[in-house]
Length: 571
Figure 1 (tube, rainbow, N blue to C red):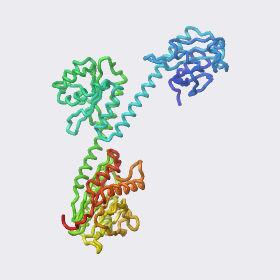
Figure 2 (cartoon, one colour):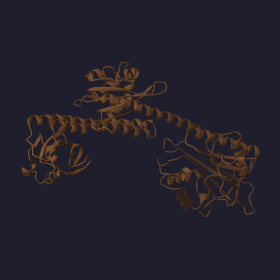
Figure 3 (cartoon, rainbow, N blue to C red):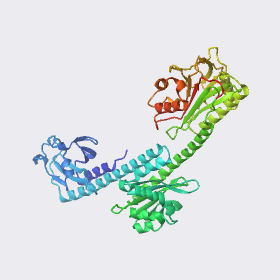
């Protein structure tokens, strides 16, 4: 590997000044050696306390430190490097940046006494200036990298475009300006200022008001429109009059209150597409952006453009998927002898648009069919796959009149024949309309790799309903005969069918989630005096509130509640 810029400075100091060794030290809580050359007494990266460092006095001072023989200096002879014989002659210059911050020191030294000349001091001071400039450039580069990294992380993890642009404003202000606006263009090239921010909390509402008014008051020669047309940054540094000249109406009045001294408009692009723009403003007393700042801001705008367009595409896909999903998940029918409620809850995370569904219908005019399912995946394709599987199952059920297990067998075979390439889990449950001799309801169900339904009995006990053996999901092994579960259930009971988003989270595994659901259902039923006294809609609202606190859902959720009320006839 080549030498670092600081190492090259140290090498030059040894060569030009004829010194035994040179080092660049950075001082914070301790002294850390950043670069060395010659025959140093300590390697790069080593550190010591400030009290033991020879460079501490140099870094803190305003000028060079000149030592002919450190052993003759009462303040220096006890320092470890001097006492060990590594340093006797020493010449050091402080590293002070443009803001007056003391960063460290550049020094040369030797194991023998030396009379340093004025020319030596001038040369070392010039080299110290070079080392300081190197450190400042490294700090700027580190800040630039940190800003880019934080913006990328913020935008990539945002739930939607509005959250993304809100985060972007807080990165730009106050790091680069006094206040800013973020504008996005839609597919019809309509502009909307979606986010604003001001460094002064007292002025944020004024900036937000300007954002609401600006688009109606901007002329074609405004810096925003010029930047969007040209695809290049537009800069106005000559005061409020030039900025406000292209703004009319109420927006001009508010802009006068904000009184920007300078303005920068930078298009945000994703390839050939202009996604929107950043408008950054400086107030009186704020220095102009430097020649390095403007290209950095332009590059940042383009990076934001790519990420925002990706988020916007994802938002559109999510909207399509949710629209498709909700169009199929209408209010469930109410078969005779039941009270039915259903809920669908989209995930809190933007990336999680899934294929959860439920269905309720009457088969052959008499049997009540209840279905819950989940197509694997979290995107538009999953929602489309859900629509296909749900429609196939409903069609097969109506045309064949098959019971649950054979219905799932036929669905699996049909999916394979149509090459749907969809993998899904599902539970199909059927209520037999003919009562048993004891007046109970016969419930049959089949399970294709889904979570077990739960039964709340009239005495508030809760049971999971399992088949004789676990079954594979749909789409993996068509042709296998599935088993069927059967139970005689007393009226006044409630059945709960649900998808995994209700019970499984990153902070809670499946067994604990199932146990929590059982306990919650038992508690709600007991407090109501038994499940027959529960309104299924209220029950589902309470279950969702208890299992998935608002905003914590990491997956979408579908859930059905079916109460077998005491009157089995038409309602």
